[in-house]
Image (tube, rainbow, N blue to C red; front, top):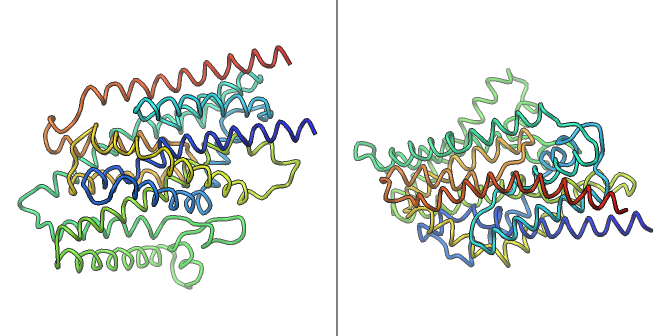
Length: 390
């Protein structure tokens, strides 16, 4: 009964973490650019992103969940007490960020907390995984911000017709989508993409099939948006924005659910619970967080960091979707606040420095770094104290 009781406490802490992430990261960032461009209202964005986040958690959440639960520390398995301490530490810091109006980087916080309790347990650092994580975290501001800047400049260029540039960008999104892996496309226990499924079904050279399917999806996507844009350019851009926001929201669920339930996974082995059931529980926590706490952060990101128009919002969401799916594919915990804020800043600079709040940007970076260090130190200290008492 004692083990079941501590598991229930750990599950409650996991749900609290899922709520905090839904309210502060996966619930607020995906549609923030669309809200900033007046393509959708704040409350409607929070409602939709919660549903799409739940779907992403169920269909794409396994990779990051396993990484957070099993790959951040070597030599030990997280105990129930360690999971509770790590989750409560991370969730508290994220919740403080939500109510203070600053987007704390959830991946920084959860990673720091899990590593902290793992080291306190006597585990060894997983240096190979840390290098992989650090490489992506450091690349996000430059890659995401740089692509957003270049895309925004392209859309602002008078020499590039907008009715052609926007559909071309939609085609690029189609290529990414064709290569995204989902559980419902793969065999039991595995994920597969539309492209890889076609390779298995068609008896032709794999490279040729991949290229042909990717090109077909790109052409269909580009044509659909071209048809929409040619009738009404503003309406077409708004529709594209909403689709991009939905794709990013789905990706957020697939990535962020692992931050909430990953530390819980090692505790579930004696109970033989399927991972899908755990992903559904975490996804529901994200949904509730999105519905109850996301509007405040949506406002902060959509208005406080940069004044956004439709073109700069499109420029911000495209690299966000690509980076998010890369992180999901490799099972790397990544913060959606870092992804979206970096992309918004990059697209904002395309309109000149005046479009970006430098003070807000510097405070946010400080909050990101501080959350990693603080989560690691607090979780290590709290677990060591609790372990000494118990």
